[in-house]
Amino acid sequence: QEFCLLAFGAMVDVPPAVNRKLRVLGFPDPDFVTLTGQGYNKMIVWLEHEKIRLWDPKDRKNLENFSNKSWANVLKDYCDELGIDASSYTDSNQQEKLRVLDQLLSFAIHDEYQDKKDSKGLKLDTAALPRYDPSDQKCMATF
Image (cartoon, rainbow, N blue to C red; front, side, top):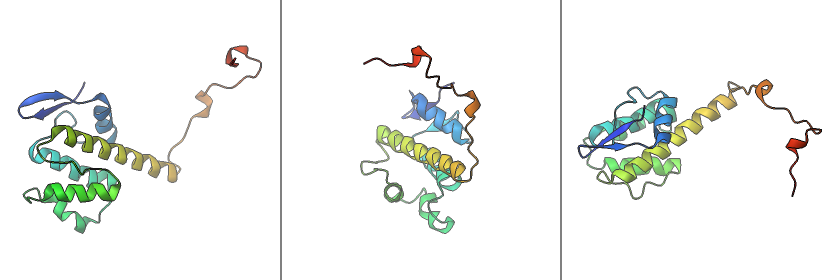
């Protein structure tokens, strides 16, 4: 099942990669994603609270204040600290909002992977990997 974004009253297909990222991260309502209004803002705040955790909880107040007219600037500062380019972000640019969301999702997935790797919670089942057999001529490349 693919996600749809509600943008200006029209359904817009979400790239499958964004769909997978939201599911992998356990987004609470992955079947309804919006690029408009507070729904988008809440998704960004959820990523910060639950996955990225860059700012201390007390420093998240401006990101949580959706009525703040400078929320876009707060998001730009947040992204800048993460190394994500959001200089072209505006509330009315749906394509840019999707790009920023996708990059934040990628950052969150990388962060979770790194946490699991560092805590030795990530295990690779090497028994399932094919073994190299030097006598197997099918594995030999010819140049």
